Image 1 (cartoon, rainbow, N blue to C red):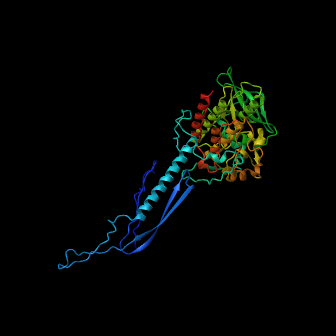
Image 2 (cartoon, one colour):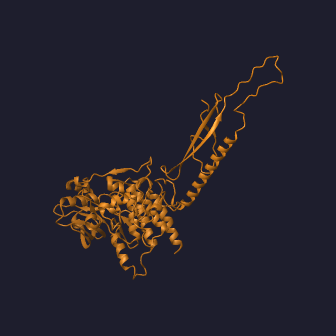
Image 3 (cartoon, one colour):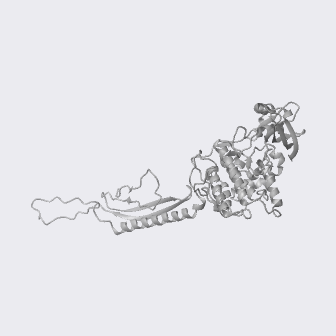
Amino acid sequence: MAMALPQANISLQGEVPRTLSVFRVELSCTGRLDSDVTILMQLNLTINSSKNITVLNFKRRKMCYKKLEPEVKSPTADKNSSKAIFDPVNAAPTTSTRVFYISVGVCCAVIFLVAIILAVLHLHSMKRIELDDSISDSSSSQGLSQPSTQTTQYLRADTPNNATPVTSSSGYPTLRIEKNDLKSVTLMEAKAKVKDIAISRERITLKDVLQEGTFGRIFHGILIEEKDPSKEKQVFVKTVKDQASEVQVTMMLTESCKLRGLHHRNLLPITHVCIEEGEKPMVLLPYMNWGNLKLFLRQCKLVEANNPQAISQQDLVHMAIQIACGMSYLARREVIHKDLAARNCVIDDALQVKITDNALSRDLFPMDYHCLGDNENRPVRWMALESLVNNEFSSASDVWAFGVTLWELMTLGQTPYVDIDPFEMAAYLKDGYRIAQPINCPDELFAVMACCWALDPEERPKFQQLVQCLTEFHAALGAYV
């Protein structure tokens, strides 16, 4: 063997240098034989993504010589006579070796310089900081930039995303939903689940009908206090019509329990139910006087031209922050909503937004749900690709839906992907297409939406990051008002 194994001075442990650094590779000859050695040095450079790899190959030749043993001299030998001995260890490097080291050093310097430039260019849209779950949703911005993802691939609906998804070792907790999970629950089981919050029908007074579908209704109601009948409070009352089937009644009760027992300023869980025999079940929630968020946004769009006090972009961003705060709480509690949208939020006259369950949404907003041949109506246009194809849901799929909800806010309640056939949605998303940037939507805000629509769930930001990113943007808007 003419050459020993290469020796590098790069540590196998510790952190990767964040500044320009020099490394050394020793290519020593063994001195056992003469040989012309071909050397191939390969550098694998990973930038941004573990699958975005640049490979550099350096090829050179190195001459190795057999080490000459010193001549054994007799006592009578001439003192001035000696044989030249070649010492490869102490010999000065050859010209080719110097050139090789210089070439490697220059290449590495150029590569590191390019990496630094790329990092600076993407600094406004990237931040690889994992927030601790204990961070409060209302905490002030700490200088976070936008979540880590390559948003430029989604800037227009006609721009395909050809990026290859990256798989991370630390995944979101996922939940696979069987198509008939809800239908497998009986009405008796659904009633038993809410029996502890059941109240008498006599305490409920129904007033105006706020929304009505084929088999469901939402009323503005009055609830009489149990301990003090002279006190009343306003409530939403969800109920069904006489023609509703047992399956539809069961689904309303089951889906109404999605947020039950959770307490957050941006969530609206049920408070009571009425399940008396002979009466159609009723589900009660605290009242929000401006009602359903989607209907509110569309009303704002209708009066926008003639209303000088029309809702501002800063108000819309503030609504998005509230929704992100509520979803961040759900993510920390490992609760997956699976149907986040403007239709499943409510708002009051102080522009306070709260997330609700999706009970009766399929009936009240039938154009937002589609059956793809599996006998199940799903919110196809709000669903992440893994949910559409594999029926897998996680906090990451909720992040995707949040991005669509943010788009709804900025368009004042328009329907996303309105020109796309629901049966073509999965293929459309696989090809990398996304919704177009809304008119008058700032690039920075659309970049936040695009982050949420990465194909790989691990590439999407966490809700804590979205809260702080939107908070920064909201503060920036306020500075110019």
